[in-house]
Structures are given as structure tokens and as C-alpha cells.
Length: 362
DNA sequence: GACGCGTGGCG
DNA sequence: TCGCCAAGCGT
Image (cartoon, rainbow, N blue to C red; front, top):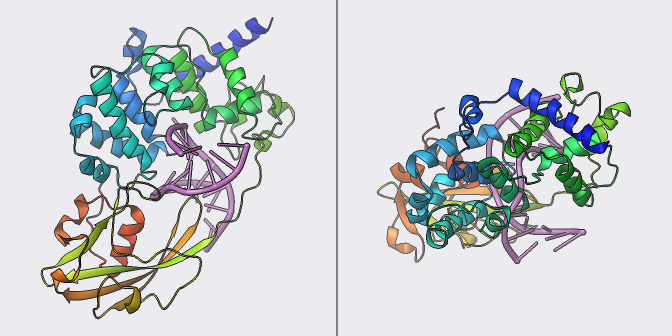
């Protein structure tokens, strides 16, 4: 009885998916899929890592850029880490880029440049967790893996009206997904569930009237789909303060440094800053600057990270004698676009030098 | 299990 | 305006 019901779910969902197929750069065309082709594992893996906690819109240009520059996983494995970090700059969660490089190196060195085709073997690679291993196994290798991301969690908790709070409900959700994942077209099933969550079963104001499950959904029967999934209240975001120093020499070069490989913005490039503390220690001007100079205040920029809000006072000084710094390097302003500068650093530099960066096109 | 970890878009 | 949050992973 239950098996018959779930088969019905699959038909509803895959029917909807075939009618609403989204043309994304990492997917193969429906005619190719109909011929039994699967997407390139390298493309699937690269897109899935980029899509971790990141919107399709933001990922598209980065995916195209990476694929054009490093057409195969071996090309990526052989690339200089600094170039990979610079190409990732702006996309966020930079540990993903560090692990992306490590994963490519592992595939090249330990798997002959060929991605392993099982969920378990994929799960052992750097940066590949429960979600990504299942997604790559299902989408690239046609494995019957239970793919659970934030979209699927939302769809499943609504479909079955699961009232257990997150993240405690994850095992139950995984079990439900495993129960309804078909042996036939598991990759399409996974992508259909995620597309449904992204376009119909949205966090706010879901379009239930258009949903293929609207005759089955228990949360809709309760007239409260927005109530699912149940989540615990979040903590308040603390504020941290600091100062950033835009140092320019007489050749129009700016002083840059590389951050430690671990932690916040790990491995990325920055301008000199003070520590980011919960209160102002000293006046955050000349005393905390990287060198003595005629520092001029340029205003304050605010940047919100995952777990705190940062307010940076920006200072600028010109015509500095370059050898007065004993760490970092002096980079011509014309080369700023090619640096591994995270968005918060671009904001600080732009505050002091409005025309520092070339606007992105497309 | 809880926390650290970016960014940009949207209502 | 501003809080929410998006195809999670590592520790």
C-alpha cells in the first residue's frame, strides 16, 4: 500500500519536473538525458560545491569562469592555489575553495583523475559531505542516493507535517527521502525535489496552487505550510569594531597582506587592519596603523558576516615610502581586480578609492 | 550537537 | 530598512 502511494508521488514530481525543466549551465539537456546520458561528474561536483549555501544566480558566472579556465579536474588540481582563491573571491565561504583544490588534487592523485562513482567514496573527499556525496552519486552516476538539502528538508517536513524541530528532525527527513527515492531516475528525482523547494515550496508564501503535491501535502491540509520546518530561535548578532588602512606609495601601489590559511577569510588577501574587537581599544587611528603616515579618515563601512556584524573605520595615506613596511607587499592599483580580495576588503578599499575596481559585467 | 564560516537578494 | 536565508562542511 505504502509502496504504491510513493510511486504515485514520484510520478507526480517527475511529471512536474519534465514540464518545468530549468536550463542551468551544469545540467545536460532533456534530449541528452532521454538518451541515457549523465552530466559530467566534474561539472556536477563543481556546481554542487559552489551551490552550498549559495544561490543559483550567484553561482552561474563563477561556474562558467572556472570551467573555461580549468576544463577538467586535473587542470584544477594543477592550478596554483592563489589563482583558485582569486577566482573564488566574492563567492564566500572560502574554506570551500581550499577544499575544492584539495579534492581536485585527491581525485588526480588517488583516483587517476576520475571521480569515484559511489556515495561512500565521494564522501571521503575533502569538502564533500552528506549532501554533496549523495547529489553527485545520484546526478552524475545514477545512484539511488537520498539527497537532502535545505529545499528537500522544507518539502519533506511540509509533505509529512513533521513537527520535530531542526536539526533534530534530520534523521527522520533522511529516512522519508530514502523511502521515496526511486531506483529509476534518482538524479532527476533529487533535482526535482530541490527545484520544487526553490520555486514552488518556498520558505515564505509557497505557491501551493501550482504544487504537484498539493493533493497529498499534510501541512497544506493543516492550512499552515509556512510553519514548516520548525526551527529554534536564533541568537543575536554581536557587533565588532576595527580599522582598515589603505596605504598608497608614490607609484600608486597599495599595501596588501595574505591572511592565515585557517578561519575567517582564510587564505584570502586583505589590507592591513586592526584586530576586530567588541569595543574600541584606543582611537584606531595613528597608533594602530601599520606605519607612521598622514592618515586621513574616509568614513566607516559595515559588513555583515554569518555570526557578527563588522564596522570598519577606513583610513588612507598617500606617498608612503614603500620600504617602511616589513610584511605584506605593494601591489599596483591596476592589478587589484586579479587579487583574492573578499567583498569586505573591496568595500574598504572602495571607501578610500572609489574607482579602485572594474565593475563586473554580466 | 553546536558553532564558525560570506555574500547578495528579497519581501 | 533590515531580518531572513540559499543546492552545507569541518571541527
